[in-house]
Structures are given as C-alpha cells and as structure tokens.
Length: 279
Image 1: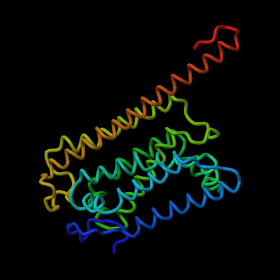
Image 2 (image 1 turned 120 degrees about the vertical axis):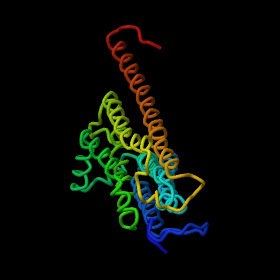
Image 3 (image 1 turned 30 degrees about the vertical axis):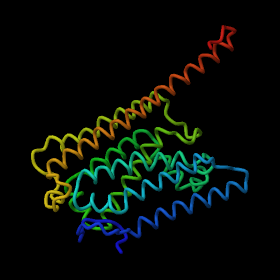
Image 4 (image 1 turned 90 degrees about the vertical axis):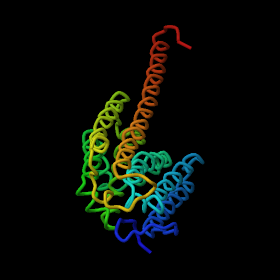
C-alpha cells in the first residue's frame, strides 16, 4: 500500500487503492478535534453542532481530494483533475476547518509562543498575499509539476503547500480571532481582488497555449476521451471560473456584511446623538 499518491508506477484500473498517509492524517485531525472538544466541555467551553459538522466536512473534503480515485487520476492522467484538487485543498478544506473551530479552540491551538509568532507573521496581509500567490505560481511551474508529482514525497509536499496557502488565505478573510486585529472589510475586499488578478496568470498560460505545458500529462495514457489540450483548457476553466466564482462570492458576502455593519453603527450613532433611530 502506498502512503501517498504519485504519478510513479500508476496503472489505472477501478480497483480501490487507499493511501495510508491520507487516512492517517484525516484520522489524526478528527482525534485532535474530538480531544479538544472533550477538553473544552470539561471547562464549560462548547462547540456547536454546526461547528462539528463544518470541521468534519473539511476533513472529509481533504480525504476526497487526496485519496483514490481523484488523487490517482490527477497525478497520472488529467491536469483538470489535478487542478480540481488544488481548488478543493485551497478553497474548501481550510474555511470549513476554520469555521469548525471556535475561538477558544484556536487560542488553545496557538498557545505555544513559537507557533503563535509564526501564525502572526503569516497573518500579516502582505505576507499572506505573497505566500498564497507564491505557492500558487511555483506549484504550477512545469518543472515543479513534472518533477515532484512523480514521487510520493514530492506530491505530498505540493498538496500540503496548497493546504497551508489556503489557511493563510482564509485567515485573512474569516478573521476568527478578533484580538489579532483583522483587516477592515474594505481591506479584505482589496485582498480578494489582488488574489483574483494573480490567479489569471497560470490560467492564461493553460488556456492560450497551443502546446501541452506539462510533459507528465502530455505522455499520460488517454483518459476520458480528452486530448491533452482539451484537458489543459478544462483545467484553466476550473482554476479561473470555479476559483473566481468562489472569490467573487466571498467578496459579495463581505460587502453585504460591511454594509450591514456600517448600518448598525450608524443607528447607534443616531441613537446616541438623540436623533431618530432608523428601522
């Protein structure tokens, strides 16, 4: 049994092939959460049912993206599935897991000073912007894809880098710890816009190239009746359209929350000043 998926010695059939490393990480994440939940309950700190469902959902998406069959197809046959894995690792797993952890659990997780210092460094908007987009661009360079995906260690490193970049990205947007002085809603919208623009770079290369960019997928056996160029363009659409829709959707939610917050603050000011309160 392989511990992680790679493009090395992958011969496709429909035989279920679990990856031990994926199951181990998913199991440890669940055990850690349950242990934290029990610890908190003994001290009068609770997690809601929604938070539990959100966290478990995030771990489940991680398992789906990293395990058979998506991992095997994405590593050895279709760039489009490889790109779908990126979207799941970055835009689905981190927010679900962050939503699932109440503030007291996050504070306990970051109780270690070295870990807290590292987290604070990556929570700075400029550092987060460079980190997220740097990992996006570097992990889609042909030499990186062709060179790392063929080994289990390399494929694992790329997947974990994607997940890490997702946590860095979503920490800016969700701002789960108020005492960390998160960005104002306007700053978060600018942060989203900057990331939306950068994602067009790899997507543009994929969709406008007349030749296969990655030799790994150019030399892969046919799968699903797609040519290499068709697969490459579908990958570009997944990155640009699906990833873009998620970012735009988040931006819309932030904008309405910003508007609602300003409206509530305006009501409080009018009330304090003796003016009629809006209803």
